[in-house]
Amino acid sequence: MPLLFENKNQEELQLLKEWAKVRAYMETHFGKKPDIQGFLYLIGVNELGFVREFEKEEKQDLIHIGLCKVLEGEFYVFTHTDSDGWPHYTCIKPVPEMFIKMQEQTLKSKIVNYFNQYIF
Image (cartoon, helix red, strand yellow):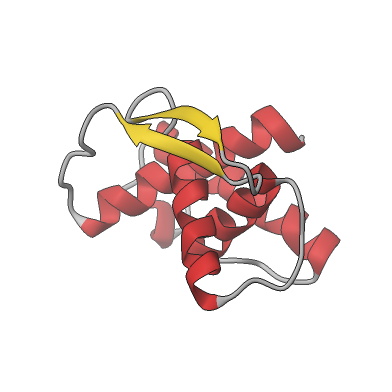
């Protein structure tokens, strides 16, 4: 096994494969491989249901919507869509503090799950 994967367990290796699949899909369809924040933004746009030019604050809101969506059920619950069509979520349990590497792994896993459920 290559050195880069020498200390990885099967679950971590599976996540790496699935993350690579999701990134490859994005590159094939959109010409770019987004980072985690980019994926959260795209998930937010997908959940919003329409595309247009977004202001900087709206882009931050879309990242938040994407985060709420991937953490839905465990930490957030969808409450309603406002009159402008924007989805709203309520925190039902605080997201625990974790080291950056664990945050990254968790979000990658949740993003992969979103793509497996809604895109693939």
